Amino acid sequence: MSKNVFSTAVFFILSLFVFDAAQAQTDYTWESYGLSFTVPAGFSETANTDEKFEGKSDNAQIHLFGIYPINDASLTEDNLKEALIEMAAASGMDVEDADAIEFNGFSGLYAEGEIEGVPTFFACMLDPNGELNFIVTIVHNNADAALNIMKSIQAE
Image (cartoon, rainbow, N blue to C red; front, side, top):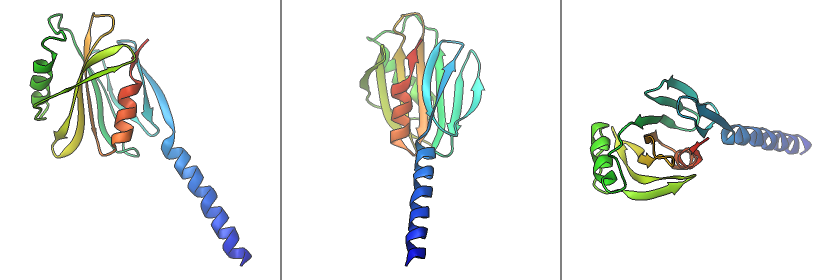
């Protein structure tokens, strides 16, 4: 009987370590634009240039997290929906409607859909400083992790 109790205790302790590792987060800063965000543990950066920041986390089932600057002064709240639909289509995502999003000083629109059959968050965010705007794409099989990444984006 004590062998079963010991085995159960070891299993429980190892489960806690695995759970903690899966929940761990890492802070990142995209130096080119002073954006910071939190990504799941095991995140690997695949691009970090002035044109894009991209990465993924196999552990958290984030297949692509990408941020792309839009240097277009004509992009405003008034034409943001049309721009989002057009940019999403260029990425392979069919969007008919979008919802307002507001967090950490950013405002904009987001849509949920699929790219190549995989769930995707797609957002156009207006820079709180009004100088530059951003597209955020998160292709995932883990909505909670994707939403956590999205909500963590902030200008420094």
